[in-house]
Image 1 (tube, rainbow, N blue to C red):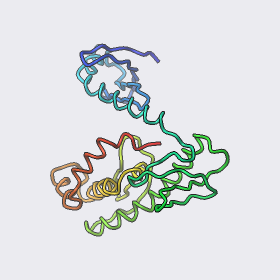
Image 2 (cartoon, helix red, strand yellow):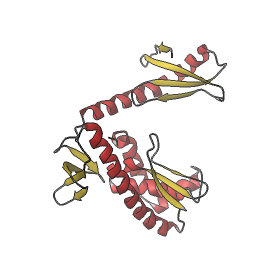
Image 3 (cartoon, helix red, strand yellow):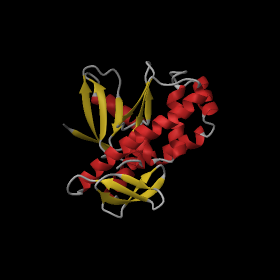
Image 4 (cartoon, rainbow, N blue to C red):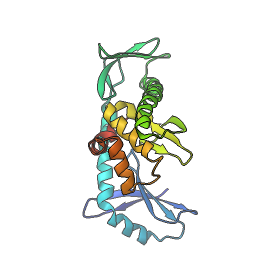
Length: 235
């Protein structure tokens, strides 16, 4: 795979071109490790790819800055006893135990561990714990909000999305990103309201946003919160 370099007024960056037979347009993606991937149709010339990248250089540079911040955040995170993790917007100290239990009064998460508590093992255990909590918390929040909306999903599931907080399908299934459990409850409610309103409006029309604001009046503030802090909601 050939790595190319583009120098622009916004700053230079490296990128890799991926040619795909079924691709119809040029798509740019900045991975969490800072690699810029450009997916293009088979016959699109490199000169055209450069032109598109120059037009999008400002966006690419912003994404690269975001990726660097996330990388630094992850690298500095500790997963030993006494280190902290976020749950519903609050920090809890880690304590390894035979089974998982949250002590809200003491501000401690007793995390059930299997074997040696290596960094990878702790992250895996935390992921399992967050997913379990997500299923319970989001089912409860969706139940409250769907009662106000007068419309309920056919199924609620938890997934490990990288670029979205939730999704709503045409058959009424709604899925949420387990990483939401690191955010405050208000941000979780916004995402739940957002996906529920897609049951009535499967788009992002004016009518959709009006419905979201009616169901959850603080939607704009929480949407902004996720835009500012969402990139750091990860292990």
